[in-house]
Amino acid sequence: MKSVRHRIPSECWSVDDDVAAQQFDNWDYVLDSVKTASKCRVSCDNPFANCLPGDHYRLLAGLIFNLDRSQGPLSLIDIGTHYGTSARVMLDYSPDEDKVTTFDVASWKSYETTYLTDNDFESGRLTQHLEDLKESDVFNRFADLLINADFIMCDGPKDGIFERTFYSLLTTVKFPKKNRWLLLDDIRFQSEMPSWRLISSPKIDLTSFGHFSGTGLVNISEGLKLG
Image (tube, rainbow, N blue to C red):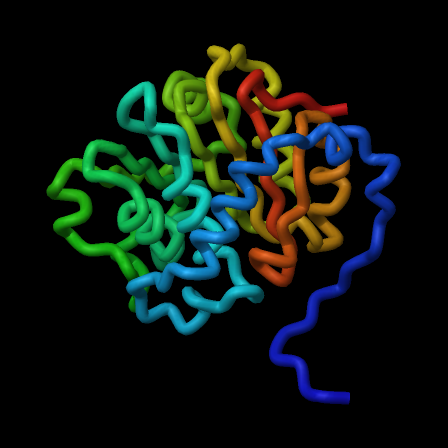
């Protein structure tokens, strides 16, 4: 067998009986985003930034670029800053009027490698919060920001706790009805597959165009529903 750089344990689960997956119908947005992803190149030194398929960054670029901005500037949220690649893509593939907010438990400057710059923050376009959104008191403090966001990306620790807890907290707040998306990374980790399956809002597995470990898109225009 040919060598494989990275393996993760996973499973194959049927999708025909996943009602939320069968209800997804935002195909124009997905197709436009995949087309953009196929043509764009991310300006970033991350060695995986331009892997398509294989990683989610060019797909993210397409999804951000093709968001509906007919009602004005958008609020974009990145959960799990780490080296800042996703935040970098959000900044580079959205107009200057859009705002990006990123959450992590460690400062972007604490990493030896980062793809963010001081200017990103000084420009007013990017804000980082050093907070853990699985904690209910923290979540409640940022609830208004979350419910008014137009696009949320969640790339958490994949520990079977953070994501499930965060999703549950999202179901407790009332979202104003508008076009809104939740992009989830690593949905094919065994720790995350039950959480992905639990989502009953319209959703689509975009792994073939995203991260090999699983990339899922959820339409949360009417909030996130589980069950």
